Image 1 (tube, rainbow, N blue to C red):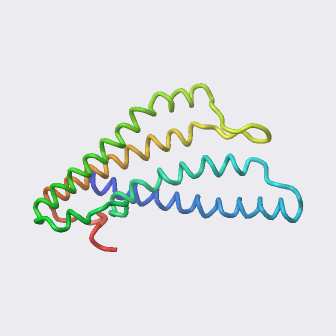
Image 2 (spheres, rainbow, N blue to C red):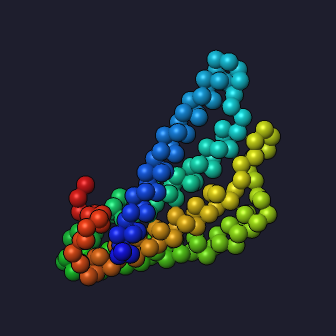
Length: 172
């Protein structure tokens, strides 16, 4: 199986997982609000779970956002340049994006390992949420984002034909 197709399938799956997670989180938040307002019985740990979940959701969706060209980018200057130069500037930007996510990986690697081995937790009181899932999601999501930026650079430079199963970033 082609690396591009594999990356696309993983990106789609993680995006769907993040969407389902966000949808489920809304019910937790709603139940906490109703519990506080109507019954004066909040759901303990909601704030800690939501805080950790936001980081996880963002990094689960990053790879798909990059691959579908949904990441924020300013092309107001680039669109006035010749197409060949546009492709190379986009590829350069993608390489910078890959470098950015590589720095996140190298900067967070040791903390992620330590968080898992030492059993690091967030929050005090009724519930303590383990830190390692969010830290490892940042590492894994950054790895996929880096791969997808490299894929985008490759596609913009060499313009190969799309294979079956690939995300077509030109189609909405």
